[in-house]
Image 1: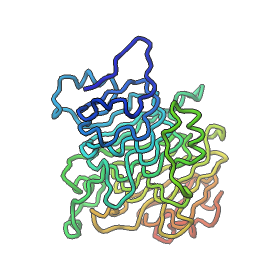
Image 2: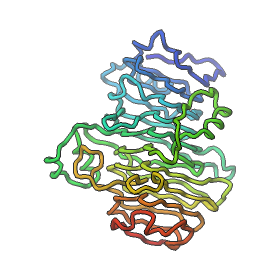
Image 3: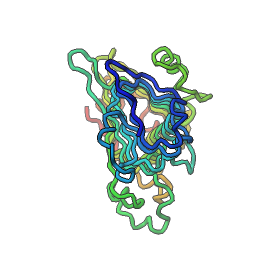
Image 4: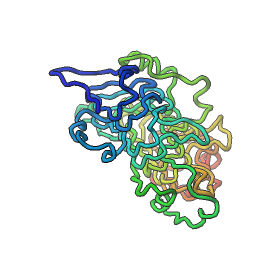
Amino acid sequence: PSKFPEYPNAKVRIVKPGTFDSVKSTLKRLYLPRTLWTIEEDMFDATYTNLKVIADSTECTTDFGKADSAITPRIDLHRLVDLEFIGTRAFLNMSQKQTIKRIHLPYNLIAVGDDAFGKEGANNAQFKNVISFKWDYKEPDPLTGKGGSRLETIGANAFFKMGVNDGKGSQDDNQKIDYTTTNYIRNRDDRGDIELSTIVFPRTFRYFGITTHDRDIYMNRAVDPFQFTLYTGNKYNRPAHAFTACPLISTVIFKGSTDSSKTTDLIIPCQTFVFNDSLQTIIIEERYGHHVTFHTQNGAFGQETIGSNSGRYKNDFRGDPFLQTLVLPNQHTTLHIQHGAFRGNSRAAIYFTGNENQNMLGHIKNSNAGDNNSQWTGIG
């Protein structure tokens, strides 16, 4: 295993691609300093042919002396609490990505680049054998408002098909599946128990997909300005796919605030949470004085934001949609929901914090999935 040397008062803030060129073909475990600020664009490419563990320096002691077969292949960064940026394609091209079982991210991240762990494509499951995906969340200090999670943006395709082990099942045996969430996932393939998680987005979160504006900001903020390659084209007109076909998440919460200066507008582009077989609950808290927008592809029917059509086969990444509860803020927040945004969520009960048509841009029943037997209920 490789571990950075410890020096009194030393703070390693950045590790450049190419740092390990002389050993990357033989490197099996890498333990990063806890003071790291950024993981660079294209940091771990296919030339790391044997790398199966990326963790923080304190775990080197725990793993030391153990045989490779006794150590779980993982990317565990949750103790890197100074880590702010994960660059474009940072882990996408790892040679051993299909051996990785666990991924754990820290609370302090500000931005994750496009294609960080995933890449759009019909047969393009990258980290497909992951059974546990966790992302820490920390509330800010109640007095100072500082010290908590401060994530702002996640790039397109960042976690595309995370945990989708494709090629299992068929049209025939799919009919035998017990369509409860846990049993469905466990029966998809032979990986054993899959750990479902809750992802909490802080009140600072605003968008899926790195934009030119983001890049300009992060170039001034980050240690290295060249860690976010941009896609060309209009971000609103292409699918975000940030968590598309990721069966490891059961609950998503977008935190809000009663103080408009401490939160921001929230934009969720098309196909952000679709084909998620385990996703049961999405809660978006009030963001006082701000907008929450669900984009479809130019408002076109067929490019939903959350959910999907009810699929039939467990190998088509659709499955029977499990979303049961969607809570939307419209009492102190303005909602903009384009047509088809929630298409296919026939089991979901959709609740509003205010009256149903309060602070709506357009008529809600004609703007999304009201015609697909979703239940609409005001809770304000």
